[in-house]
Amino acid sequence: MLGKLRPVGSRVPLPSSETVPLPWAENYTAEYCASGTDALALAVGLAVLRKPDVANPEVIIPAYGCPDLVAAILCQGAKPVLVDLVRDAPLMDSQRLLDALTERTVAVVGAGLLGIPERLDVLADICRENSLSLIEDSAQCFPPQSADLPLADFVVLSFGRGKPINLMGGGALLYRGTLSENQQQFLGRQPTETVITGLRWRLKRYLFNLLLTRTGFGLLERIPFLGLGRTRFQPHKGITRRNLPSGLLHGALIDHAARPLPHKQYEQELRGLESEGWLLFGSSRFAMNPAISRLRFGVLVPDRGLRDSAVSALNAAGIGANGLYEVALPDLEGLSSLMPPAEFPVASEFAGRLLTLPSHEDVTQRDVKLIAKVLLSVNSTRA
Ligand SMILES: *Cc1c(COP(=O)(O)O)cnc(C)c1O
Image 1 (tube, rainbow, N blue to C red):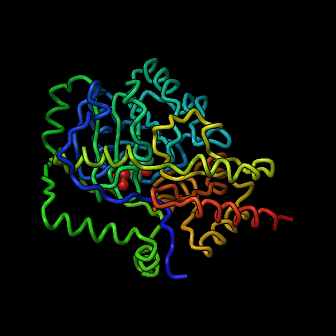
Image 2: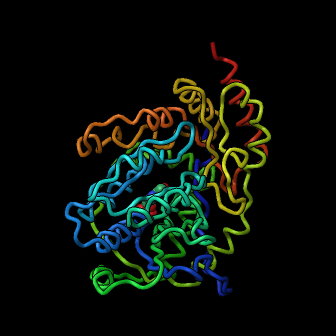
């Protein structure tokens, strides 16, 4: 089969001359930058400056998630401290989080995975009691939870390829209140670039969107050296701030609000698997705001073997499904040598059982029906 439905990513929108309100404008100031990782590095840098007396600062993150979290923390000279998850959910175990706190902890990162909100209220209580910064990593959720209820001190957005808003790269750091003089100096030290949506940008956008089509993605996947979809740890070099044309952001917000979500249909079509030990990451399991984009539809398969069979069968049927990061953070290529060996049994089990299904604007009802058929057939092969 030549064409394939891409696993993730929405088309790059055009700038708009229409102005729409930014969802966070009431409570946060935005600093735009070159990526979500840059935004997270800014947040970590600012959090470190809030506690100038702490030497060798530590930042708490979940043991399953995007390796860029580790890169952003390391590039600010801080140490990532991992916390295991609660069973069957991408949420940090709050007791383990409390156990992981030391006098060197400066911040906690609450990361929403696939649109599933972290329990920011629980994390905010812990942070308040221990004078820590709360960073909401909303790279996979848009709009961020803190836009409605400003619980986080810092919010991280990504405008990368596989994120709810795709601007072919970019990110934003949202911060509350005013920055101290030291923090302002830190921001001022980071170099700035300007995004120009001229002819070159438009040509790039055209090609980018072409590669998101079934034919485009099918071809792209055949280029082996691209290593598409493989997650590897990459150190983060430096932060670049960005001047972003406001029309681009407004165009993206208008486009995002108009995008359909296939999640209801996924929940209906896959419901039969729930009595077979599969767990659907739908709105019935998590308090998900219906307006928050889901990025992908997550399913916890009964075991790793069955998950891997499901990934193979779906891809053979032309559906770009995958296991996202596949392993817990310490087991990722390039990270095991950097992190002390530690056991995160719940995160490891979660990593082995997670299956992610496409949920972008080009997923049709027929696709969802096909996916359900393939998964039901994979399940029926179980011994
Ligand atoms: C993608 C991602 C990032 C990094 O964003 P980039 O724009 O790719 O640098 C950070 N955190 C999470 C949870 C992500 O999914």
